[in-house]
Each structure stands twice: as structure tokens, then as C-alpha cells.
Amino acid sequence: MRQSSTRAGGVPALFASTLAAEPVRPLLTYYDDATGERTELSAEALAGWVARTANLLLHGCGLGIGARAAVLLPPHWQTAAVLLGTWSAGVSVSFHGLATAGLPALGPGVEEPFDVTYAALPRIGDWLDHVPEAEHRFVLGLAPDAAPLAAPPAGYRDYLTEVRGHDADLRPYVPLHPDDAASVDGTSYAEWGRLARLMATDLYGLRPGDRVLVDAAEHEHPVKWLLAPLAAGASVVLCANLDPDRVERRTREERVTRML
Image: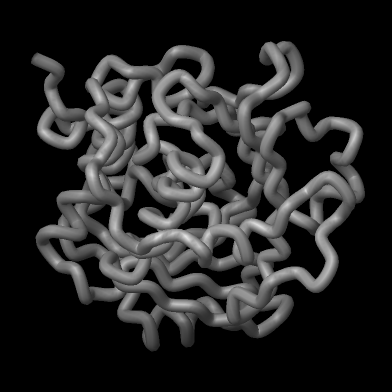
């Protein structure tokens, strides 16, 4: 009998435990100091986006366990939905193009094509020649207020437009095994879960209930800004284009207890 990745403490469990314990507590608050955006999601609200993303892949694209996704997205609340939703569908991920020292950064040399790619519109201009081939290509504009794109680039579908057409409940859940590959290099759900817990406790010293301010420019890899806080039972204040002059006030207003 396959053991559930949730029961085994793999990647999906990191979010599932938070959702079960404190569904309405603010879990991820996103700031972009270049645009003035502030978006706050509870675990329950994020779960809706996660389920829609998983259903988009499972039912809209016909993908599931064994499929592969390339993610070319910066730290963002929509990236959290993409990653958690993709993993919930059993699709393994390549953090394509990341260059975070000491952590998997799957880029050149990863076998193509992929089954699905997600790319951020601000990056497509520079990365167009490096976006992997895939049957399904989604673009994210990452605009404030989750505004959809008026005209996606040729060959891409707007993620927000597509995902909103799917159910916010994920039933039945994909029966993931802890040894299933969460990333295309073969790293399993359980291994990512262990790494996230190790980083949360031994590297960052995070505790349940912590409110963690994260500078997105300094912590691009999702195991740092997303999985480690989830493993600790902490919530995240994720700041893009962080203005140093706003840190003190934001720390006070958001009741930040730790900074990365």
C-alpha cells in the first residue's frame, strides 16, 4: 500500500499541516515596493489557488505523476500557488534558471522538452531563448490585484485566466508516495521536506508562530522563502524590491519576529 506523502511528512504535508491548524491566519503577505502592491493570503485562500493549479494540470492538461514542469518565476505569492499546486498534482519541478549556491538549480543540461512551463512576463524578454520546450506554456504577468494579461505572448496561455476556470477543491487528492520525485533531478517529496525542516530549525532557527520577513532578492530559492517557513509553522512577509527605509515600519506593522 502506497504511503501518503502527507502522512510521511513530504512537501505537500508542509502546507497541509498549516492549512489544518490555522486556516484563516495570514500565511503569506506579499509586498512589492516598486509597485506598492500588498497582497495577503490566509492558508485557506492560498489553498484555493493551489487546488485550482493542480486541477488545471490534472484536468485541463491531462498531466499527473511522471510529468515534468519548468518554473521560471521569482519569489511571489502566485509562485507559491504554482509550486504547491504542481506538487499536489504529482508533477515534478525544475527550478529552471536559478543559481542559488548550495541548492539544486536545474538549468542548462536538464533534458527537454518539459510537459509544462511557467514563465514570468518580466523575464520572458530576457529569457525567451531559454524557456524550455513544452506542450503547455503558461505566462504570469505578476500584476497587482492578480490582473490577467490582455494579450499573452505568442505560444503562451495566461495562467490567471486559465486557472480561474478550475475548481478550488482538489478531490480526490493525488496519492503521492514520499519517494516520488518532487523535482526533475529525482529529489523526492520526503527529501525536500527533510531539507526544509533542517533549514528551518538549524539554519534559520524558526519556531511555530514566527512571522518571517524575507527579502526576495536574497532568498530566491523556494526552499528558503516558502518551504522552510512552512516546515516551521511560520508565516511569511515576502518583500520584492525591498526598500531599506521601509523595513523598520514594516517589521512593526506586520509584527515580524524574524528576518531572512
